[in-house]
Amino acid sequence: MQDDCGFFVLCSQVGKSKDLSIKTMVGTHTCGTSMKIPTIYVKWLAKKYVNNVRRQPKISLKAFIGDIYDELKVEISTTTTYRAIKAAGYLLYGNE
Image 1: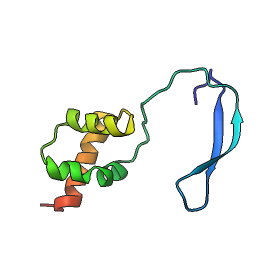
Image 2: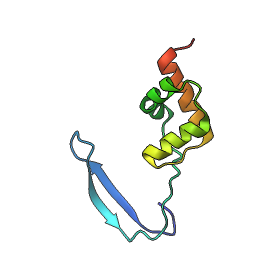
Image 3: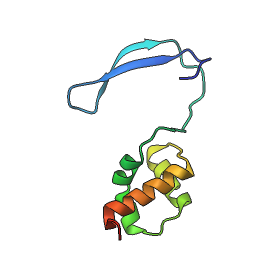
Image 4: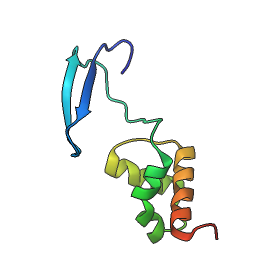
């Protein structure tokens, strides 16, 4: 939520499904979208993209960022990308 927009949504998960139910929606969304997510979890990325690292063990940061953007439409930092690739390597190969 941006301070000048005034729009926000409160929602909750429906049972054990991945569906969300909107409980409260206030205002009209007037600002542009941002694809930057600073709080994305490295462990989650590592698990989700472990097969990408398996297929390309020496994948570049730029290529990995591109894979994530193509699928999730989010931008992540190079630091987060590096840590996710490293974590995926640990999942695949351990501490070799």
